[in-house]
Length: 170
Image 1: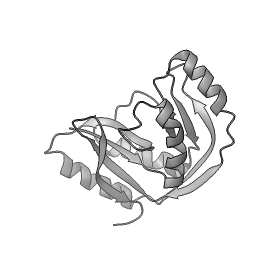
Image 2: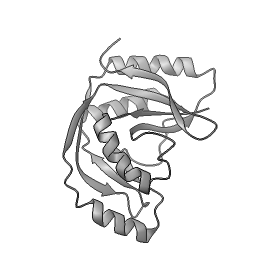
Image 3: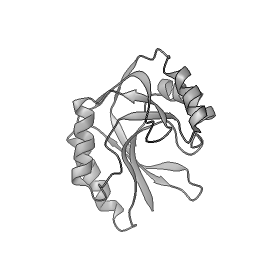
């Protein structure tokens, strides 16, 4: 089964992200706005319990994370994804690093760039037009995230929570 690890922002930030995602993100209906800590990976049914125990330990060893967003950015020319740029705080980077070092299936295609996607799989012309408009947005958002989630993918390609892990707690 396919799993991933994410942090969900507040409803306020999810609503803002969704106001763009419903127009510019074909994955809008498959998963709520999120910050990916570990991209999709495969685990067998027999591996999930051990994996979950490791995640509980990681969560206990990390404190809540400050999420700060101050602009819209893009991964172009690598791909035409537009996102809210999350400031890479030390706490967030340490959590990501600990997940990568402790858990199997840690090979990643890209460096960790914390973000919340608001548009993807856009044509080059559409990307240029949309990004040109959105990067002018004056976004200034800050909040604290105190949990991360292990998700799994359903048969219809949507994602749902398998388990939630509270940072800094047993």
